[in-house]
Structures are given as structure tokens and as C-alpha cells.
Image (cartoon, rainbow over all chains, first blue to last red; front, side):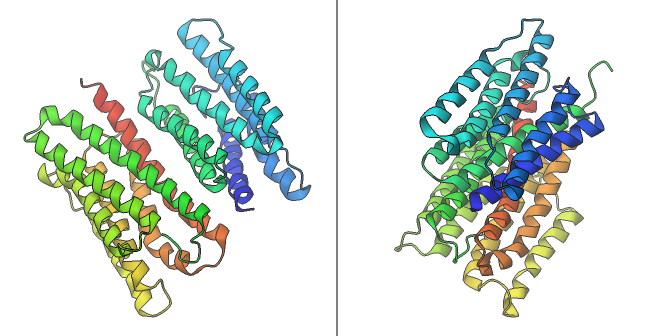
Length: 187
Length: 214
């Protein structure tokens, strides 16, 4: 029960962050499709609301939200590297998520979300050379949190997994906020 | 922050997770000083002391969670706290320590916390003293990171916020040790965890900043 309390609070926080990002219009340079950001925010908020008012578990929505973020990140990377849009991270996340849901059941959709976010950290780390953010170590920390969150969840330590998930998302949000607050070079 | 009522394996493991974040912070501090070693005097001695401190923190924390009967909990707390101070010792050695008014105010608020114990309404002394010692060490580590002056305005604000959250936890410890509510204990621990994440993030950014020097 505590696990759901914690997870709901964390997801509401993430959802509010994205909705505020959409409202202020200054969320991050990563975000290019503002309406998708609003959708992501609403998806994160909707799971705790559904759970609270209808008692139904729709945590798969969070996974869809993270896949949307991955899509935005890939779009950002392709624009900034002058390369082609790479669908691999999305494909791996979707495949991993589908396998987890198939073999482990709907209770493990939290793991799909964490897996997709961990892949996001790894993907951004991979292209960090081209970015001037200077957040390489922060992404490593975020990646390590994601990895440990997956491991602790597998061992049934749900609250510990929630804490690590919170740590990972908080670091990713801090990177986005700092990136948005830092003036663009040459501007 | 360990609530005696919440000594379930799940809660203790969550406490261990907060320690894991603290380890990451300590590791980053070691890496930062390893980079600074090239530009400072007696860098190796200082680095050795820091590593010793890091090991003491890990030893103290791990034993604290494992709760070995042959070692009393205050001793484990003390080992961890001394380790923390050793990790932060280069700041004293390189004379970067600055006693600002804000720091004095924070220490005063923290030192006032045991007064509630004396009135009989706060946490028991056996929880309060080791807890406060650790929180003070943590506050020193966060303030010490501020003294390095390698921050962006954003990370500086984050570190200041983290230091105030840590000060708050010196009072929150009273609620945490007395509440019977499991979820409240988790939320209170999450508060402390947030401060640690702020600290780790700032150190990670500082390490990246130093990476541009070399």
C-alpha cells in the first residue's frame, strides 16, 4: 500500500512538472512539441487519479508517457547532431516493456517505466559529446539510480525502488530545469 | 532517521538506499579532490584521509542497518560521522571553510532540536544524539561543497536548499521516531532523500565543470 502512495505522489510530481513546463513554455530545450509535453504530464497525473477515484490500475500510461519523452529526446538528438532519427531506443524500450508485461504481468509495468527512463539516460549519455550541457556525471548518477531501482524491484523491495525512481526522475528534471534557465550560447 | 517502530526489512532497506545516495555523493567528492590534487599541496595525504573517511562511512552505515548485536548503534553512528568529517577534512586543510551567518543560524536551529527531547515530547536521547551527529556531519558536507565556489547559480541555490532541508530533518527526527504511521515515515525519509539528491546532483555538475580544466 505504501508503495502505491509513494508512487502516486512521485507520478503526480512528475505530471505537474510537465504541465507547468507546458504552461510556462520554458520547460527545456529538449522539449520541442509542447502539446506532447502536456499529454505526457496528463498521462503521469491520470494514473494516480484513476487509482484514487476508480480503483483501476492504469500504470501502463506512465510507460506510454516515458516512450513519448524518448521520442522527443530522439527528435532533439537527430536535430542537434544533423543525423537521422534513430528509433532504436524506443524499439528497445517497447520490446523490453512488452516482454516484461507478457512474462511478469501488469504489476510490473512500473519496471517498464523505469527501464525506458534508464534507456533515456543511457541514450543521452551516448550522444553527450555533441551537447554542451555538461551534465555527463548527472546522467551517470541518474542511470545508476534507474538500474538499482530495477534490481530492487525485482527483489520485491518496492519502496526502495520508488525512492530510486524518484531520485532518477528528480535528477532528470533538475537537468531540464537548469538547461532551461541557462542562457543559450551566442544568444 | 531510523524509526524504532519501523524496523521492518523494507523500511531498513529504504534507509540503506538513502545511504547509497550518500555514498555516491562521497564518491563524487573523492573524485573532485582527486582532480584538484594536481593543483594542490600534499594532495596524496589528503586523498588518503578522504578514502579512509569514505570507508568509515560505508562501514558505519552498513553496520548500522545490519544492527550487529556486538556493536552498539551509537558506536556505528560515531564511526560514520567521523568518516564524514574526514571526507570533508580537505576543506579545513585548504582553508576553504567559511563560517557564514547562515551556517551559524542553521547550527543554532539544529542544536535547539534536542531541547524538545529534554521536555519529554521529542525523540529519545538514544535516537536523538547519534541522529543529530550524522545530520550535522551531512550539513557540514553540503556546506563544504558550497565553499568550493565551483557552482552555477542554480546548483548553489540547490545546495542551499539541501542544507535547509537537512536542518529541517533535525526537527523532523522527533516526528519520525514517534509516529506509528508507516507511510508518514517514508515521506519524512523522502524529504531527507531529496536533500541528498540535490547534493549529489550539484557535486556531479561540479565534477563535470572541473572536467573542462583538464
